[in-house]
Amino acid sequence: METNSVVDVIGVVSSINPSSSIMWKNGTETLKRTLQLKAMSGRSVEVTLWGNHCNAEGQELQTMCDSENFPVFAVKAARVNDFNGKLVGTLSSSQLYINPDFQEARILKEWFDREGKHSASQSITRDSSGLGRVDIRKTVAQIKDEGLGRSEKADWISVISFIKTDRFCYEACPLLVGDRQCNKKRHFLA
Image 1 (cartoon, rainbow, N blue to C red):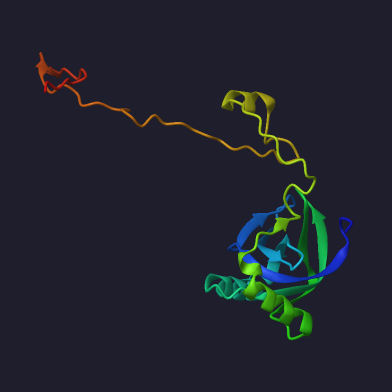
Image 2: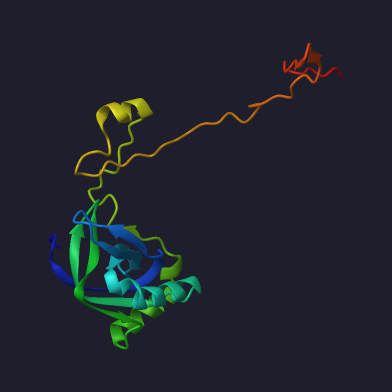
């Protein structure tokens, strides 16, 4: 589907994240909650619930998933977005249905309970281009020098730190040298 298209979607909620508050560029704050919808096609898509949809329906979905009762979820009039692949987001006019009572929903739930829960799915949200992500190693100094994270477009950075654990400290010599402790590395004789 084209970006900004308005679509209806249905699937089984296979995972959901707690809601979080985000700040828009214009200074307004809103709630956001993301979930994964899984379909019989073997595909999954990320759905973002915005604003008031995070509270009532979002909390009900969270409670159901936390108790491993993964519900069928349908959204009427959601917008297609393109951010690192396709995803779907609610609009203020979107209508949400949890475990709707119609034939397609029943078939979907039976499939999920029988086999879908344990089958892998391919997300159309992440890396939909098929190219994958290319990781380039950089030092923190290079990240600063290149101004990453300071432009309008987001820069994704993973920081890996290494702490040597095999002897990062030692027991100091307890002997006094004058009025101060020696503090040299203490050697033990066996």
